[in-house]
Each structure stands twice: as C-alpha cells, then as structure tokens.
Image 1 (tube, helix red, strand yellow):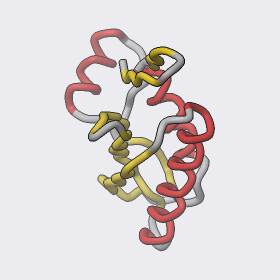
Image 2 (cartoon, rainbow, N blue to C red):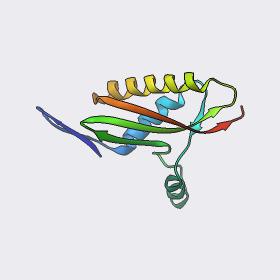
Image 3 (cartoon, one colour):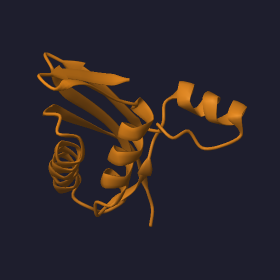
Length: 116
C-alpha cells in the first residue's frame, strides 16, 4: 500500500491499482510490445497459474513523492529514446491525474526487443 496523509485525512492506494494503471498507460505508447516482469513475478504467476497484475511495475515513495520503475519490451526498429520519453510523460500525467500524488521520477528499463 502506498499512503499519504494530508489535512483531510489519509489516503492509501494498493500496489495492484498502481501496477494496472501504469501498465495500461505504458502499454498504450507506440513501440511498446509488452511489460517484462522479474523472476519473482514470473514464479508468482506460475504458482497462481495466471498473469501477475504487477508485471514489470514497481512503485515506491521517496520524500513524499512517487518513484516508478517500469520494465518493458520494445518493438525492433523503433527509436528507443522517443519511446522512453513518451512513456515517462504519459505515466507521470496518468498517475498524477488519477491519484493526485506527485511523481518524482519515472525510471524506464528496456529489458528486451521483439520483432513485429
């Protein structure tokens, strides 16, 4: 759970909500062929016999702001720099609009490249 307190009370949002929100926003960007999960997420999805909802996304807080880590696979032949900039802007905007939490940093890791 990611939580913040303000003058009106406290707000807590689950990791799964952030993973679905961020994963959907990143997947919509041109050139992204999918999300890449960690070994732990792969083992967890095999044991549960279904896709892990937090595949390739990690959200944490630093100094009261969110830090987002995204692991993606890109399509071969596209400009990786342009894809990463697009993802950073879209994820930052989507998270801030949906939750009202400030995003300090979006780290995008390109883990693999897939043919079309």
